[in-house]
Length: 375
Image 1 (tube, rainbow, N blue to C red):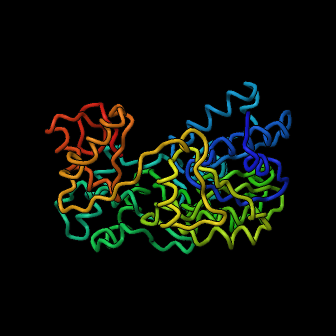
Image 2: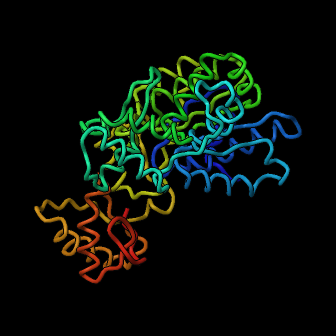
């Protein structure tokens, strides 16, 4: 696996490391290389390496890329998962009998289940709401818990959700379900209150590779802290405070450096070469979020001459049709290689529908057919 000098330094560091990685810097490649190296060190032993990332899509990508560099039997020596999946399968379920109030099952209450809607409806009715909207169900799914068991997250800014949250979790537990917030909270309590549990988990997993560390919440940091206290595991943390986008879910990027210092992690290594963006894009990004060392444009993207265009308008759709679409055509880009970004998904619904009516096929919120990708 070919690595840049910056990536190689991160790969070779033997101890705990906090690696700051700018966009397009080959972060995933570095994580994969590190994971492969760590697995090779525990091959043929009962020990394992855990790679924890933020989304299922990232799990699938890392898992596929790692498998291409390892032997089939190595699968027993590593785990790639989200933090919720890791806690569920390696803390909660193995030690379920020690969880207070355990009812014999741990079905995960995802928003795709019909029971999720039923439970949300009942919880809302208990506080006088009978007309839930799509956004309300999303907010129920965004309820979080901190290490003290208090409810957190921007979902609680809605008074109805704040009042209904305890009923929602109680009803879920009564039906044999566990929600995502409770997965983390009960895992934390097990590690905190039962030294045998924390020792067992830390003994098995000799290394923890944490992706997107800037979007880690306070309770997730507490879980990692308890595992580190066993002094049996190394930590390879990768993140970038400027890329934190999950503040609404309780992400605390300000926890990155203090936790790194606490575990004695080296934190003067960085990936600052951006292989994805043109010099113009990188220049403007540096103006918004200055870095040290500064991010630079490298690779093929370095030769892109297209300038950054700022369009001020009161009508986003007109800006797209008058400026964005002509620019795509001028650069001879297929629509499937172009993206429209917004601060939140609900802002994309009217844009997506208007583009569809305009004759532009789109993929994203409010779209029905496959074509240009809108995220």
